[in-house]
Image (cartoon, rainbow, N blue to C red):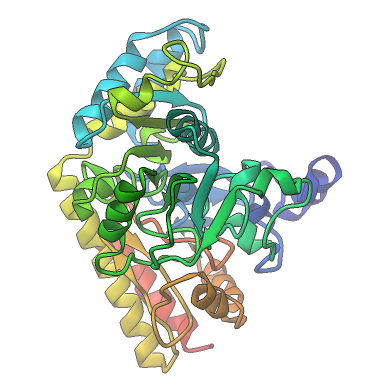
Amino acid sequence: MSGLTNEDLFRRGQAVMPGGVNSPVRSFRSVGGTPYFVARAEGPYVYDVEGRRYIDYVMSYGPGILGHAPPTVIEAIREAALAGTTYGAPTEGEVLMAEELCARVSGLEMVRLVSSGTEATMSAIRLARGATGRDKIIKFAGNYHGHADGLLAAGGSGVANQGLSGCDGVPAGAVADTVVAPYNVVPEIDESVAVVAVEPVAANMGLVEPAPGFLADLRTACTEAGALLLFDEVITGFRLARGGATEWFGVQPDLWCFGKVIGGGLPVGAYGSSHEVMAHVAPLGGVYQAGTLSGNPLATAAGLATLAALDAAAYTRLTATATRLADGMAAAFADAGVTAVVPRVGPLVGLFFCGEAPTDFDSADAAAANGVYPRFFHGLLERGVALAPGPYEALFPSLAHTDDIIDETIAVVADVAATL
């Protein structure tokens, strides 16, 4: 034991970092209380600096699909680090990662690696504008595409968790060409629209499934208008299926953005498209984008080791685990007389304290505003189960969450539900 406490670290952090954290949702602002500071993690567990162990369903918001610190990934990082951590020159790992992504996703022919999901979406939007010669973009309320200026309007995830509808410091001109539409409704798309960006499964306003036909109809509307369709798969990429949302839904966009899983827990992002569209990216074309640490050798090593473990059997197991969790939680709420829905899309699980699963941001926002989630969150945390500290996030069960751990979680949920 180090003698450190969560309270002490939070106090010290607040003196030198805004809110004491480096990402807003970690501050516990939307649930109240003091955040736990993680000292280490292993498998399905995180341990705070005071020695408490939590069954973790945050899993770094997606990268921990194998569990925390999987030995094969740690060994890959170790081997890569012994050869050097960054070079500012091309590496074999970058080529291998690009080949792996293109092999998995139907229609994806070229990718550019970057260092975060925000970089990926920001660059993909620039590429879409450069490739089409158009300026306008359409996004959906409650979809979160990172913190680039033009994409923060009506964003989910951390933006919504802070009670914000946009962002101070973003000039009106930055969002003048951003149109926000309701999720699950195909908007009007005309010849001024460069790209329509969508989370194929909305996982930043809780978990909201696309309505039947929504993605296919969006594909048709974009094609007819000559606009590009962008799937933001920073969360769904290689979590829903081996080929991501394109495989899961059978709908192929023009642009993809990836992150989280493909870095194996290290900072990474990627965007990609066809040869024709990617030919607009420098040095081939006039759309400039660069990054000193893009394609970092540690990140590509960790990502390749992670993807190597994600075969058909892994996805079957992930879905079974998520199903056991979602069904068990729903039954626990029903037994306790608590009004709640636990939506599930493949290996992703959501939670809303309302009577019907939300279909858009307005209904998800109404469910988040009723004040039940913070009480439930702290009830679980006190009993050793960690969910995201905000009602707009998904749950991320991993391959390390065994049936016994899921059953233990369900028992804790039942215990807390009885107090609500």
